[in-house]
Image 1 (cartoon, rainbow over the protein chains, first blue to last red):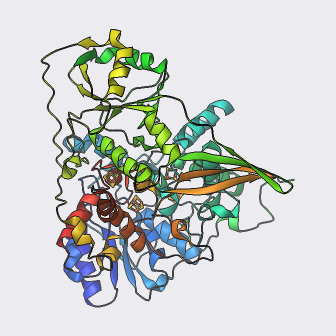
Image 2 (cartoon, rainbow over the protein chains, first blue to last red; image 1 turned 180 degrees about the vertical axis):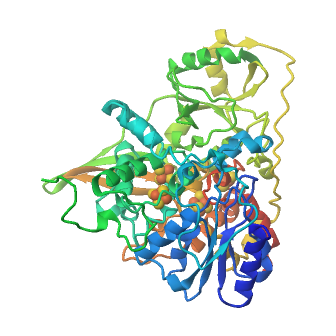
Image 3 (spheres, rainbow over the protein chains, first blue to last red; image 1 turned 90 degrees about the vertical axis):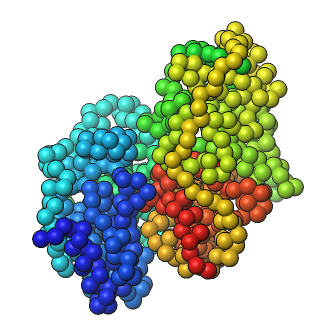
Length: 302
Length: 333
Ligand code: SF4
Ligand code: SF4
Ligand code: SF4
Ligand code: SF4
């Protein structure tokens, strides 16, 4: 069997040449060894740009929204976590299943590009697994039209895979006093640039118009200060509550390193405690806990 | 030329901080930025360039412009008091020094002077630090910037193995160094450390002329596909200077403020009534590159990019301006 990368290229060429799809979205090699950004291929002659390596972090699902109104059928490469993003968009009626062709990749973990940059290429071997991969429960794609099984499954050694640690930082923050917690979050969000990279990359953030793009509405202000920044942080966290698939893309995209996942995972933890275990985007038929009503809710709201 | 031990730098900063607000690279939650020195912070001076550019010292993220009060039919306006505080900006690199010249062009020339910017600019002594080492993302030399010596600054510093060499360039700089002469030792015949040699190279020759013919080119649709339309690139760019003006109303009083804005946002060009002349990321990204590489050069005779590499380092999807420049040079018209 050939490598994942070779198979990706073969299939992309076939799909484009046969006209089954008009575009293939995958990853290509970026400016530096630790970057494998998204690539959009429409010409079969360009399929050799596609790559598969330990830095193919990007969840490509969100890009489907850009082609929502297009007639084209698009092929997308998806890792396990990415397919949860697909389910997410399907559940919200954001995309049509028959307009996407999903090529699943059995993922063995992705490395942390930011830490790779810090360590340098000479210490490539020491680059740790991305945090989200260390507790990932669905490395195999959940939804796909075909599955690529490569010979290079062990590319990223899964010895860092702990299956635990999901709430490590959340628990640390929970143990803080309210003052310490305030200092922690204001310390981080004072840095927030309000660039909205976290929102724009997020497959759970798919409102046609975000409240933060409506600064004249009076709901939110455009000042970049502590109060507005915290308002943004809390609002976004609550808007993705129950729908966040824990892909970690928001935190990775944040240019100033804000630990956004701790906020998301705190909410996930609370939801699981209050409404029972729920993994967003895993089961297409199971409605997110915050969009349904159940008279047996264990919530003691009075 | 003067000299000070690296270990004595905090003392020098303390001394300047007696009279002025001193901004110097410090760590804030893992991010290096020019922050006010209070003697307690963790200095990152000399450890590569800051992630956040120095622009917000002159052009704050949010700045109140005036206050207003409405009582019956009369409105009273209260302008902001002139900013008198003296600033010392320590350790900007040659790329960022060039960015201040571009900001000066924008805010101070062509018949309009931005009062808010001018006051802060005039009240600031700018101290540059030469680069001994370039980051893999640095490409300042593409714009004929010398990493070993900055343009338009008041004082230039160089870092040696254990000291800083300090040289006043302007009278303003001379004046500042005089205030703290007891901490600075005069030296002669010191050899300056070699300037950094950026490895990231790009040839910008002819790029403006090429872009002048490319407004409708298909390239923009291609290159913008992966862009998220976030503001990371523009907010971290030392030369991006767009702002929005809005107000905060509370009953019968309120204030007008301006705050950073980004051409990568949809709201940026949305008109009253909903029309948007830059409806998709294709037009927005085109604007960003044309602004840097065509419009600013046409208007001010210099490129609007200084090769600091911040955007290509932090763009979540690796939109790399050097690659864009290379590709633009190659596309057929
Ligand atoms: S909030 Fe963050 S982790 Fe959750 S789905 Fe959005 S990008 Fe992914
Ligand atoms: S990506 Fe980071 S800096 Fe940008 S808006 Fe989100 S939290 Fe703020
Ligand atoms: S180029 Fe990159 S940083 Fe800039 S708006 Fe697009 S995704 Fe964001
Ligand atoms: S465009 Fe990018 S490299 Fe150029 S000055 Fe701005 S942030 Fe720096």
